[in-house]
Image 1: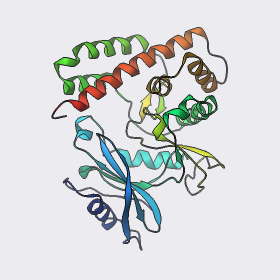
Image 2 (image 1 turned 90 degrees about the vertical axis):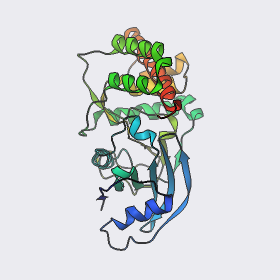
Image 3 (image 1 turned 90 degrees about the horizontal axis):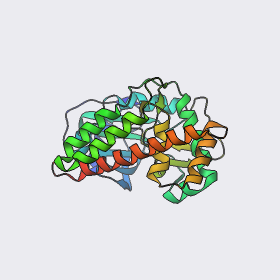
Image 4 (image 1 turned 120 degrees about the vertical axis):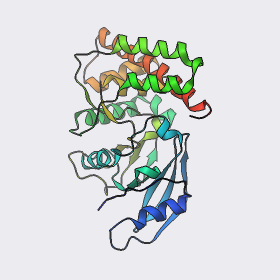
Length: 287
């Protein structure tokens, strides 16, 4: 059973945040909880491995930059539940979006590293999982990439003018107004892929197999052209042209045309500029 909590925001330690979320849960026997150790630190949020109700879970605590960067936590919980039902990611347990807190189930497995994204076999796995994501019937808003460019440019300040101009130009050239939009993860970087055999997650059509591949951190998820997810995989990990071609082939299930390769290259160029703008926004004082 999951619990959704609303309240006013303040800064909490990991132990205090966990106690706060657990206190709001209406599930009998869930009062015992403890913080085990930190998992990941980022400019947007810190995550901790915790124990809750006899199982391991992940506690995420936002940094102030999360709101400034436009992350919508209020709608996230329902989307995570739908992702879990589809068998694509771990289920949420409790959340307090006003305080920037989320508790979700933990996946016991291997978190991918950049080196994994340079292996053709694993790229084929990633492409297969992204096909599943893109066919999932999940309610979500569209990711407004133009608005993201503008937000990051405003946060980064005058020094980002040229970078923002390039990003807008690239987005205009690669976006197809007639292309269907599909549900996308929008941040499929290596550390958001987890391979694990635990059969305790997911109840939807993508049931766990011996080596299920999962995606975590769905905070940017929403409808988009499928090319963007592929562009993140290629651009973020600086994949070679041959790996880019084989990844696109694995995704399409056939050899790509020259036009399709060119289109993907355009999306990669846009993603690289967008990520630079994102980084510039994060390092600007006050963002």
